[in-house]
Image (cartoon, rainbow, N blue to C red; front, top):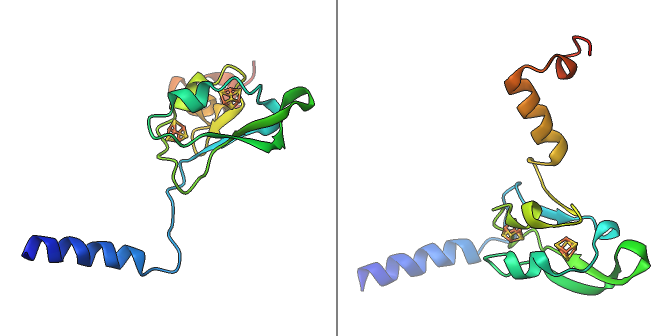
Length: 115
Ligand code: SF4
Ligand code: SF4
């Protein structure tokens, strides 16, 4: 009984909030690059990506993938597997990761030390 009451209290604390904040590391689809291949839809372990017919994909095709940020768990699987590179994981975008790896390896070109 006590455990059930504690669980209910925790749930009520979340549900009573007017808004919920999601983590910043969520996947975002660039619909203009999406080919509609459904890879992200199939691979997401949480079933988050959906195809939306009201979006326009690459080459003006009807429909593109959409990821609802509030339920994305930020695992990055879809971003890694998208063959069109239409998905970026916020805070871990290709540009950011390249810069981080470059800094780690101390590549001169990324440090403004020449070519
Ligand atoms: S994997 Fe990429 S190209 Fe394929 S449906 Fe998802 S976002 Fe579109
Ligand atoms: S980042 Fe992970 S949880 Fe979010 S949509 Fe992609 S595969 Fe699903």
